Length: 140
Image (cartoon, rainbow, N blue to C red):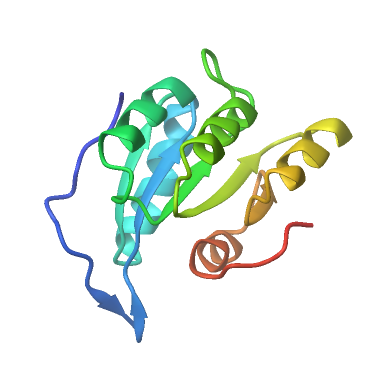
């Protein structure tokens, strides 16, 4: 797994909102790093994983740790859809956001069937990304 902890063990409050613990899963290192930095600059604890398998190992190690998982779709090893399926099987209690550049209709339908909280298409405006992390909402 590529990633690190910021050293903050307990989230703080940001502008009246609870700081969140977010795992960014993307095999494109610059994108994963950008998302991590954006989240940290917004006051959140953020980690990153380079693929679905590494993310699943991190999540299973402490199922209650992360509030939100942001995952890409097309990754080596364990793809985003497979990761989401596994998260549903193990009853991951947090929210799930899919952040991908292109999804086929079948993939969109499958993510919706797994009741992900948001589906964002890359490139995403950073403000839209942060709002999706904060807000629970219906997928498009």
